[in-house]
Structures are given as structure tokens and as C-alpha cells.
Image (cartoon, rainbow over all chains, first blue to last red; front, side, top):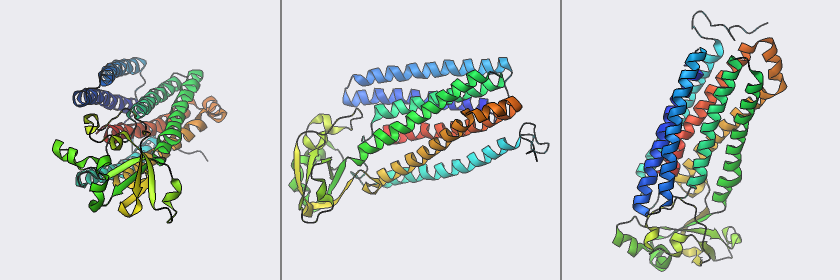
Length: 69
Length: 291
């Protein structure tokens, strides 16, 4: 597996972590009632979206440049 | 004598040698960390009620460190892509960003997170003396609420000499919020936003203590796992940073001028290692900090 492919795998796991952290923040807010975790959840979901967009951008860019090993 | 297959593919494997080497090495690393993660999971599953600490790590700082590592994986790939496009200046800057991220991660871990733990004190009370310290433990309240029993009093140790001096018969501890106000419903759940110790001091007689120590590996299976896994991970980060520094120094420029593809391949294998190290952290963070 090339660095490019491993990077895409890594971004997928990072995206899952960001989504999981967002869900965790929502859960903590439910049990603790601390609104700061709503902000944490929103930030986590935004990061997950950014990572997804970056992942697609990276894949397309590498494909276009022909940097595939 | 020139080392063969550093750039061209070896006919029998179809890959250049370093790539085969790094994947064999990463396979052994998967087994190493896999064993440690399995040990952590089984220790946690088997822990008696009240004996597995929760919510002791600083989640905001851990989140920041996670973001830094993810960022460093992006910059190392961009460094590699820059070399592929023969843009050495861009490579140099992306590699510097990667090294900086690694150094920040290690600094936060070694200069902030770990020392905070080394400065914290935990006292497990003997079962027969739990009632004597009910005002700090609130076990009647915990039982009423269906919460696990509270067996430990934590905070900052005031009389540090008490740890080693047998003539000092008691510990004086500035209590953590949970032990300062154990019947407060806000303390029913672990708090992941940092809360400092209170001004309330508890005096605990040594004869009532089953076990007392700073938050060191010997404190509990939890901290033994935490320091082993994060320590081993930190050593990997340090190794990666040292390799990146070597490839960022002028020696890499000379290799680039002689054979740019060779340098790109070196960056690729070290980037694969770095991604693996970051992927390990992607599992460490939720296991230790969130769950």
C-alpha cells in the first residue's frame, strides 16, 4: 500500500473519530447538561465534514497529478 | 557498493526494498500495540466496581493533541507530494511543519499532561474504615443513586513528607471536587472539562489507608496501561521526529540533488511509519480519554 492509499485510510479513521467525538459530546451533554459540550459536538461534526472534503480533494488531486505508486 | 532497489522495483516482489521493509516492521508494530490494547480492554472488563478510574484525563488537551497529529499526517503527505513534483522548497516547509507538530505533541504530553498526573495523589481506604470517611466518599448517596462504590479519596497532597516518613501518621489532602462535595448530583458523572482541586483539606490517618500513591503506573492497572501505551506511543513519535529532522537537514538536499526519487521514497516510508503512529493515537484517544 502506498502512502497515498494509507493517507486516505487514515483520513477515513480520523473522520470516524471526529463523528464519534461529536456523538460523545452530545451524550455527555445529555447526562451532565453542560451546554459547552454542544459547542464541542458542533466543532467535531464540522471537523468531520472538513476531513471528508479534504479526503475527496486529496484523492482527486493525487489522481490528477498521477502520483500513484 | 550501491544498495540495490532503493528506487526501482525488485523483480520478485514488485516493490522497492524499503517499502517491503516498512510494511514488515509495521506488521510487527500492529502485534505490539494490538497486544497492549487487548490487555487494556481485558483489564477494564475485569476491574471490580469502583476500581477503574474514569474522567481523570484532560479531554480538551487530548483533543488538541489529536488535532495536531492529524495535521502532521496531512503535512507529511504534502511534503512527499512536493518531492514527487520536484518542489524542494515546499517539501522543506511541509517537513518543518510536520516536525513542529511532533514536537508540540511531545511537549504537551511530557511537560503538561504527565506532570499533572505525577502531582496528583490517590488514597484507597480500607473497607472497614470507609464509614469513617463517608463525608468525603458519599457511599450512602452513591448506593441510593445506583452509582459504583467510591473507595478512593483524591487531590493534592499537602504534607508530601508523609509518603516516606513513618513518623507522620496522617495524610493531608486538598480534595478534588468529587470528594469535597460527594453528595452533589453534579458529581454523579465524571467531568471531562478540567476541574482543579478545592481548598477543602481532609486529614486521613495512615492506619485507615489500604494503598496510597501519586498517579503513577503503580497507582492502578488503569494508570499502568495509560503510561505504558502513551509512553510507547510517545517513543514512536520521538523516533519519527528524529528521522524527519534528519531528512529536513542539508544532507537531504544533497541526496535530492543526486537522486530526488530516492529522497521521495525515504520520505514515503517514514511517512507510512508516521501515519501508523498517528493511527495508533486515533485508537488511544477515545479508549483512554472518552470511554
